[in-house]
Length: 402
Image 1 (cartoon, one colour):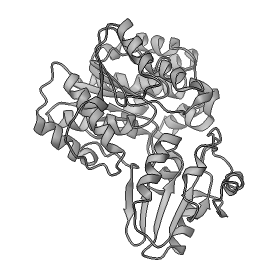
Image 2 (image 1 turned 30 degrees about the vertical axis):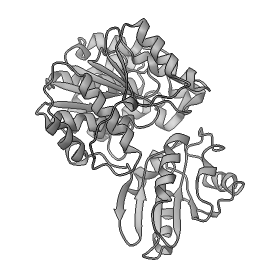
Image 3 (image 1 turned 120 degrees about the vertical axis):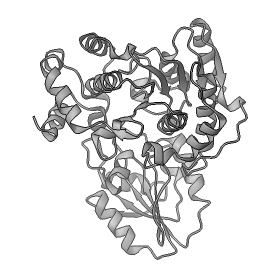
Image 4 (image 1 turned 90 degrees about the vertical axis):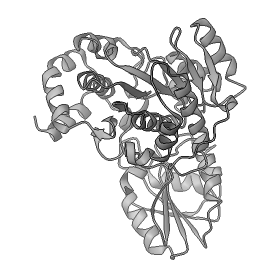
């Protein structure tokens, strides 16, 4: 198979969560464990930090990778979803896995993958772990895909577990209250492995403390710590991710990470890891900002930041996925902006006309466009040089303008 044929085959196996939503989510680790056995347990051949949480887990994972790279280590980084290219999900010191590695791995294990009926995410995790083991990384930063307890990544025993925060996202899978969601996320807390919780949220503190106590795991709340570091990742919301990343590094035993490595790592996250889509400024005059925030907690912070911008008129290119509860999300957006409603180009995308109709009920007005790129082009042509354009609402909308 060619690389593009390999990807087509992978995407076609079992529904991919980013395209299909809830139907693609599997409720146990049987396949992940079986695949790990077939691969001779690559997850046991490298050290790791496991990063979960509702918001900030991607940024925190990239910060951790950057810091450890600056300390001189060979660092694997597994994240999801990808924005443009599948290979973004699996990186070592910022370099994406070669396409040939993806093709040869899938070809070699195709019979097993078909017989066992692995999902897209399960086979990708197996690929990542096998690649990190064969490349002999010193440590890998592994971002949870969804939830924690039953996530395919949860077959590792890390050096440190990290849970950034808890918000109401993926409620149809993880539960409809913060404590229920916290219970799922707390599933990555392993016996005697220190756990860092990013934000101390009263409602869920008991869930984490109880689980950590049961596992005899030392627990630290990053928001209780005081560290003065800056990062090249824009957006005020990154401050709490910085605290979480630094706290996790302080809990990491057996690695020599100086204060200079922490400072340099946080200052050069984009250069070291090639992270995109987090309060990213695409151009000036008009200023164009895109951000992958897509749930209430994430968008609250992004809209607060947007309101600090100076502009004559705000233009918002907005698209969402169909399983998103819009009631708490849409009222966050400013009413005085001009909206360009669109549908991300995936089966899960919410039709733009439906989004427009729901948005109108909370006072957000604008036109419907047949694609993200048409909406974006229209915003660019309408905006004056002193205006600002914001592109967001979904990771998949941002992917289409990058």
